Structures are given as structure tokens and as C-alpha cells.
Image (cartoon, one colour):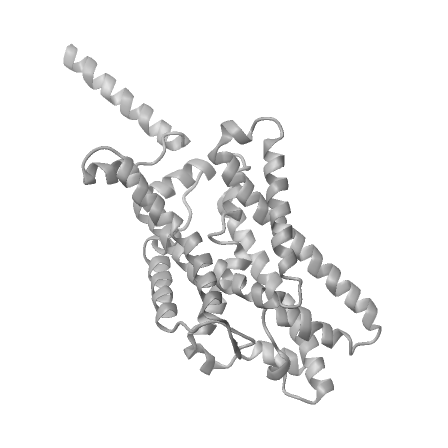
Length: 339
């Protein structure tokens, strides 16, 4: 019961720690696959009239409910481990790879029939990893193949691309299962797709959808897809709530930034931090650099360039309908003038 109490009764003093908010936000982003392209890639295979609004609501309830129930399984075992060692649960509760590969297996070894529970546990870890890998790879493959459809949609090129990325990922993963692999793994985990990077992507996406594409036009598109307009709360979240929270947390994380330490004790060398920041900037800077590149190659004045680049694509069904209506009105007006 100590583990369950530790899980259900939070410590309010930890709310002043910015790292707690960063960890919580990062977990939400990873758990829902936000700003990773996974939901976008999977949703691209749906029919246009699929009720994506209902799917999102179901996803939120199922994901949060599953995470809440899984917490009982984790902390009940950690409570058992703390009881067996006659220590406080806060000393045995770890996060990240330490929980999955050190604390939890150690707790399983203290239970009856430890070999059976260990087999079940690591089979679960393998299945969870494969499931996440499938979705992540599908997002990357879909983005690349849709970006260059004339090349990758010919023959078996898409499968060869998938094979190439899988082989490269396998060899990179081999480095992380060596004796010092956990040090490298934490650099990847902390910098490559960190909470700071995801917050910046969330800020850019919410600004693009809420202000560039337009929240009203976004609602018109949803209504055209599912047949009704969702609650207006989403509109205000896209335009105001999400950008403010993401920007505030992003600035807060930069102000309170602390260099990565292995097990919160061992500092990395300078080139380790340089490698980590290269991971962060290599994925983060692509978006603003691409925006500046498109702004540079588009002809016209600065205002005309921004107007052209902020115009929605004409291949959207709703946009095509608006264009046909506009053309019809123009044609009718022209005929009236001729008469």
C-alpha cells in the first residue's frame, strides 16, 4: 500500500521545480505522440469523412486511462521492493531506463517465481518497443514517400527505404547496448527529441494552424469532414492557450536549464554536450530554415511572399469548393456586366 499511496498522493512542493513540468509535458507529448508526425501519418490513411474528432476524444480517454491504471502496477511493485529493503519508496523509485532495467527487474527478483515474472516483463518491454518503433518508422516513411511520390511510389523503392532506415537504426542501437551505451542513450533521450524541442514544435504548429491557416477555416474544414462543428474550446486552445503555455514553458526551461548529468551525478565532457545540442538543433532548425528558404525563393514583395506562403493548398476539398464558388461568382458577375 505504500507504493499506491506514493502514487496517489502527490508532493505539492515539487510543483515549484521546473523539471517536473518539463517531465510531465514531455510524457504527455510522447504518450500521445504529439508533434512527432505519428498521428498525422496514420490519419492520412483515413477517408476524408472519417470522424477524426471522435477518434481524438477516444484516444485521450483510452491513453490517459491506460497510463493511470499502469501506474498502479508500477508503484505497487516499487512499494513491495521498498518494504522488502526496509527503506523509503522515494529511494527505489527511479525514472527512465533506470526504472525499466534496474529498479523493476530488481523488484521482480524478490517476488515468488521471479523467472516467470521476469520473462513476462521483458516480453512486454519488447512488444511495447516494437509497437512504438512501427508507428515512428511509419511516420518517417510516409513523410518521405509523400514528399517525393514520383520516386518512392515506384516499384519496391518504398520498401527499400524502410529497409535502409531499419538497418541504420539497428547499427545505431548496437552502440547503446554496449557497456557504456547507457551514457549515449541518455544523450539521445535528453537532447535528440527533448521536451524543449517538442515544445517549440508545438508552438509552431499551433501558430500555423490557429493563425496562419486560421482557426475558423480549420473549423470549416472539420465541419466539411465530419458534418458538424466541434466545441469552440479547441479554437481558443489553438489560438491562445497552447501557444502561451508552450512559449512560457519553453522560456522557463531555457532560463532554468541545467546540463545533463548521468544519474544526476556524473557530468559529460564538453563534446558530449556539443553532440547533444547538435541533435537538438539539427531537428529544430529545419522548420524555421525551411520557412526562410521558401520566403527567399518566392517572387514579389515581402508582404506578397508572406501572403502567398500563408495561402492554403488548393488540393483540399473545402478549398477547391471555395475556389469553384469564387470562379462561379466571378463568371456570373462578368456575364452581368456584358449584358
